[in-house]
Image (tube, rainbow, N blue to C red; front, side, top):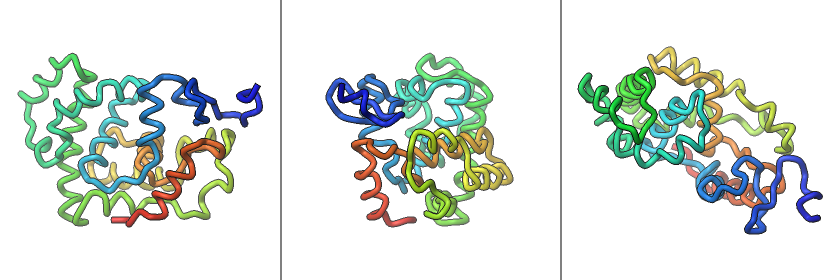
Length: 213
């Protein structure tokens, strides 16, 4: 009875907690939703990891990538872009033989290329985070209420399009506007937990307290 009165896009889990609809009752997905998604991040390696994994997700589900994330971290040196930038053709062949990750040559080569581009960004801006957080949307650009209907319209935004365009101009690949917006959602540049989700207020509090790089 209680769950039927929830607003569209909200789901009461088996643990009784009301969440956004998308993790369902899958324990690992709920943990990601509750403890990671939307919390602001300034660590360069985590930011680089996420933007690369969003590229690997293209054509797949995020849950598929999430369940392989530890394998990706081992394969790509913890997404330390200074190390990944030194990967070579033998590294690509090694990764193509790694059944623990998504074995897609284009995406693997893109990650190595993007690592080199990340090194250049760190040199130019002092950190990758400093560059990326420049694209955080202003409050006036955000929906007044984050309903399911509002969320469904936010597959990409002016800011994610601008980020995508600038990254591609700098030589990055697999960073389209939709991929860029999913990255912004996950890394806390926006708070897209729905109104009524038990974790929206926590994310908002962390965003208020967060010191932008």
